[in-house]
Image (cartoon, rainbow, N blue to C red; front, top):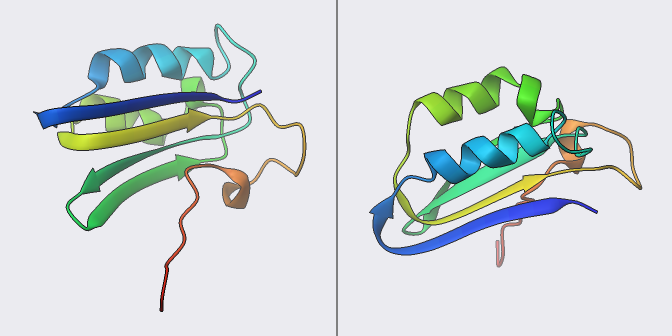
Length: 100
C-alpha cells in the first residue's frame, strides 16, 4: 500500500519537516521505493515534482527538501508498486485537465 502526506493550512506553509520523514520511508525505513511525487497547489495552479526513483535516493526530492516551497495545500505520495511498472507515468499525484 502506498503512503500519503497531506497538508491544508490557513497561511502559506512549508512541509520540510514532515516531507523529510516521508522521503526516508520511500526506500530507506519503509518499502515504498517505487516512485514518489508532491504537488503544491497555488491558487488555480499547481507546482508538481515526480520521480520514479525511490524518494530516499532522488535528487529531485533532495531539491524540493532544500528549497522550501510555501503553499496552502500540499499532497505528497510514495509508491510501493503492486500493479503497473515502475515508471514516471505511474507516480502520483496524477493530473487531469477538466473541461478542455
